[in-house]
Each structure stands twice: as C-alpha cells, then as structure tokens.
Image (cartoon, rainbow, N blue to C red):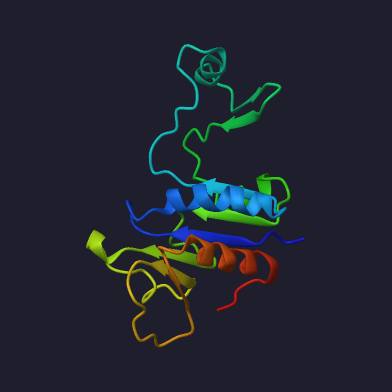
Length: 172
C-alpha cells in the first residue's frame, strides 16, 4: 500500500502546528493511523549532551536507538551526508493511513495551505500547483483552477476535508 501523504504548508505563524494538534486526535478517534513528519531548519537536540545516548553519538555512532517501555527514537547522524529526501523519510516510518508533513513546502506532494493574509506574507497556492486546498480566514478569491477553499475558523470543515482526502485522495 502506498502511503497517502498530505503536506501542511504555510508561513511561520500561520497555525500549521496548532491545526495538526487539533486534527491528530480527531483523525485517531475516527480509527485512522496517522504519521507526522516535521521538518526543521535547525539542529535537533533530542537529549541533553551529558546523557549516554548523546555521548555515544558524539563518540562516533552513526545511529543510536533509544528505547523505553513508552517509546523509542532512532537518531541518525548525517555527518556531512545530504539530508535524506522526503520519500526516504516516509519509507522509514511504519504503515499508516495518512502521513501529514509539516515543512517540506517545496516538495511535489499534495498540500493543504494555511493562509492568513494578516501575516503580510503572500499566498503559496498561486505558484504551487501541488496545493489542492487552502484553509484561510479570508473569503475565497476568484480562482483560475479547481481548489478546495476551507474556512480556517471551521476546524470541523477542515477535518471533514482531510478525512475525505485520507479515504479517497485529492477531492475538491
């Protein structure tokens, strides 16, 4: 089964993470298994430098897997190698009904854009044909292409669209 992927795109401060925090428990309550990939442009510090796992990475381990009765995390040091492509990252994850991707906004995957004109940043959808839906706090403009326009103030509407996407693929 090819995993269904949906990017959540938008400028910093648009509410991407807040929307995901709402969607994830709702999707899980509907019985969907959902993975999330969050891209960061910053270095990741997942454990304090004095902890054993950090010390082992610093000593030269390429990968360290931390495991507990509650969760596990695999930390892979790139050591100068290029960052793996999104497809490689998705392939590392366990099977899911839907993988939501925050970041990677230039990747050629279907995306839901979060657009708030008050941020003073331009919308992404006019130049990104991979954006299949926009959640915004503004009225929809006259669109030259088929695009779902969702009310950012109606999270239930956004949830319904994401559920439809998870089950059927892109649909406006």
